[in-house]
Length: 496
Image 1 (spheres, one colour):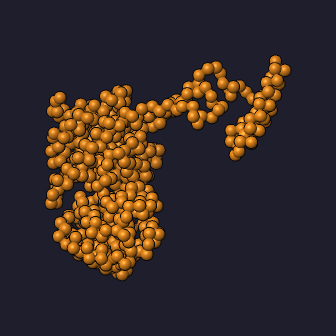
Image 2 (spheres, helix red, strand yellow):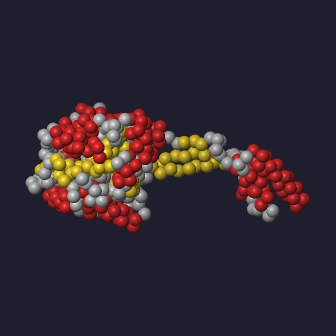
């Protein structure tokens, strides 16, 4: 198998996006006509190429912090390969037509056979984020392609090289280059694509960006999947292992430079355990590596911290950033109504909120508009019970962030954190449209005949026979159904 990169047929910058979509639609029709197994062979080759030669993708991602290459391999390259392997093993089963049996079919539909099949949507626009520029759009593209779609990839500003490397990975595996086209990294490019008529949009970004894109999509009635901001909560129960909590919080605040939508931002801690946790965090975060912050994020964070301190919060770990890098900061005495506890800020900042019990923590957590992810720390049975009550798309028990990369599980948020899911079986199905085919076997059904009048009693009897609460009522309904059927048959015979 040759892995030489073919020439990508990228349109010149002045070419209209509509022309790009026209090329994609033609290629998509051919791609969708292939068996799922044939499409998966291309994805398998892409995974195998990635395993042998990850450097084109790896080197396209900025490495601006200590251990960045190792972290990128662990957080983007390996999970992307895992996600493709999941599709290789499961997509054919997930996408195969579902034939419904007789069980549950209403009796009046006897003689029908029903099949639900999954059709590709067409051209899917993937609007990629800047924090995981390979893993997230790579997974979305792989799912879209497995389902039979074409992909337009709009990279985040400054990540065009990563997007090109992703496209090259798939085309080196034999994919028609028209099936994955890279757009410019501008807002205008995404707007042009939606106006030109894409069939679905998958956006990973801030809630503000999501609202803007949804307003554009409403004009064209274009459906979307919105994976938006987070301000994740950590629930520390009374029986939690505080050493584990501190270790997990350090990991969550440092991972990917804290540019993770499910990074911990709020921790709800019982009053009596607060001081012990602060002591452990002080020790754990003492030698944390600094991370780079864009000026806009730095200015926003300074304002949020100053406002929280003016409201009574106190800085117990770290210092408010006054340079372009910062180490993690922890605020105690935070009120859930403060902006710092309600904001989607990509910076290593944690708000500690004292609570009385689990119910108190749940109530205070809902005051934040975001509901993407959460973590619970404590004994497993009680913590799992608490997890079941948390309003969030994904909840981890005694762990943080990493298990969400499991390719089997869906990922998505609620409320201001968006809607719809990506990844897993549900994420694959979300990039298809269900089509139901119902076939009538036998002669013409009676419901095609016009009503002759007087059928009310027949339908009432059927309703009772099928749906009454007890056997006696259903038997009476069945007997009434027989009488009504015989009466109508006699009348029809007399009329003939």
